[in-house]
Image (tube, rainbow, N blue to C red; front, side, top):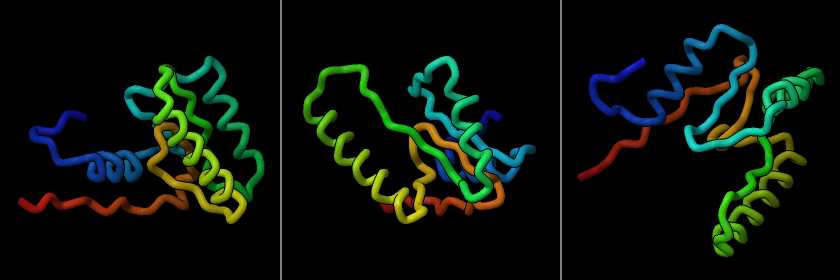
Length: 111
């Protein structure tokens, strides 16, 4: 769907989530590269009915040490979150059961 003017990521995600026709919603950023079997692997994780969302570890395609250190901390946070049954829906690549998705709050720019 093309927007006549830019109205933001939150609107785009809300529209996509609302109009999804299946029980599972997969979100992928435009610059995310996936391995060949990523979709089938991530969908298989939903065989356990207790699972509501799945994300994966981000691997960088560059040697930026600062970014790698940051991603390492972020991966640690993600592992800790999962121990408490939490998942963050803004991961570059993730999947969720449609039934648990919530509306994303729009951020309003103040000029």
